[in-house]
Image 1 (cartoon, rainbow, N blue to C red):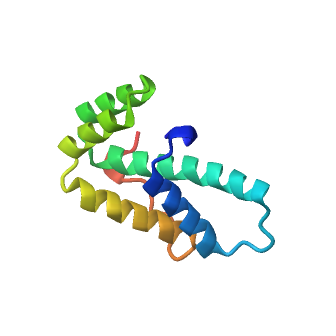
Image 2: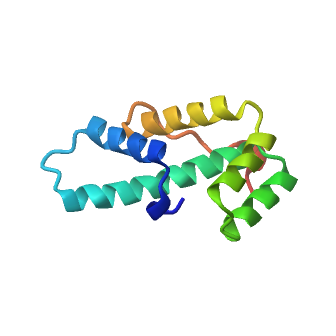
Length: 116
């Protein structure tokens, strides 16, 4: 995800995570760095979750789209068409990321059927 074109819902989600983490003495500069880091981590987490549920053929297509810098709406349309219950899946993925980030649960291991 490109930070300049950050989805407003994602930006709000990240803001809430930072607030929930309750960093002491958080300066604006440090907060911006945390936002950048969290955005990258969230992107990686979401991509890994999608890769785990996509067929091998669709994983290749998904990776091609990302490498080619396809627009977010095009990537989302592809994922919506190829991930069962896309909205529910994405919601659960965001909730899981939140719990991992806040230390409520440990990060799950990589899916055994998709390991290289």
